[in-house]
Amino acid sequence: MPSADAIETYAARWQIETLFACLKGRGFNLEDTHVTNRLRIKRLLVVAVVAFCWAHRTGEWQHAYVKPIKIKKHQRLAKSIFKLGLDFIRDALLSVTYSLEFAVRMIIQFVDLKSSFGFG
Image 1: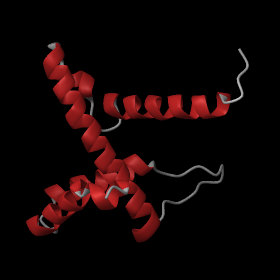
Image 2 (image 1 turned 135 degrees about the vertical axis):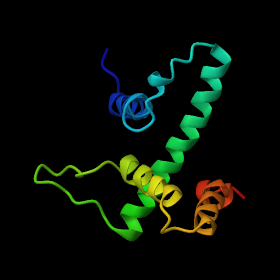
Image 3 (image 1 turned 180 degrees about the vertical axis):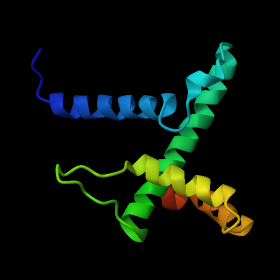
Image 4 (image 1 turned 120 degrees about the vertical axis):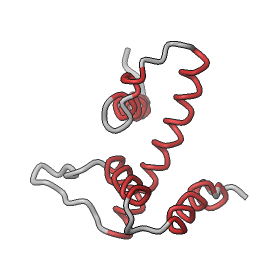
């Protein structure tokens, strides 16, 4: 049925589809865990969604303030915002180049809800 807000509805649906695509195969590979217990699935999903938000937020920061992602000829980004953030977090946590102090600061900045989401 035609709807006045069809574009907005589709955009919201597409964001959810993108989240699940990332959780299933673009970095988290949740299906590889073979978890079947409902409570464990729920807990795993909560952790994965928080990690997704952290990676996406970090990617937005990287793209806006550190190094913008190149735009291809067809006007799409060469790399997703999520992947940019996930790669940065992975490198920061696993590389000896970054100190533990820097990783802790990153985590604290993410958890700081007042600045991240405009509360307070």
